[in-house]
Image (cartoon, rainbow, N blue to C red; front, side):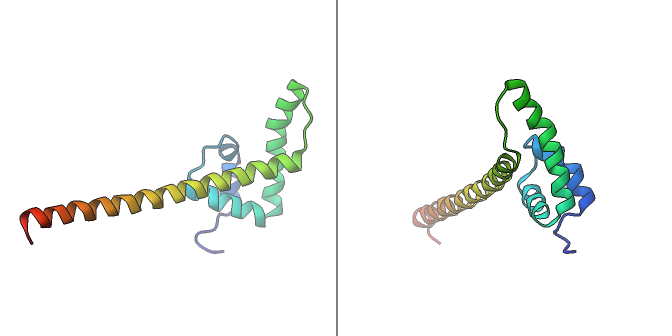
Length: 112
């Protein structure tokens, strides 16, 4: 197993945290990658998702497609992670440009 891959024990511990949408960006990536590869952990995720979301749907009297909703939940988590990474990259680029402008002004005013 790759050092960066998540093991089953860690993945199963993180299922409730994932369902509460409290995983960090790197944890989301490792978690969702593991769920794609591990049928046992995916089954445990499905059971826990069903227990939480299924009860909500039963209480509200709404219909429920477990596979579809769980897949959408996982995709949304992965998408949110990608969005945060893009924002960080964009922020770093803006920060670099700002520093270059400040440096340019400094050189212009005070010479080099």
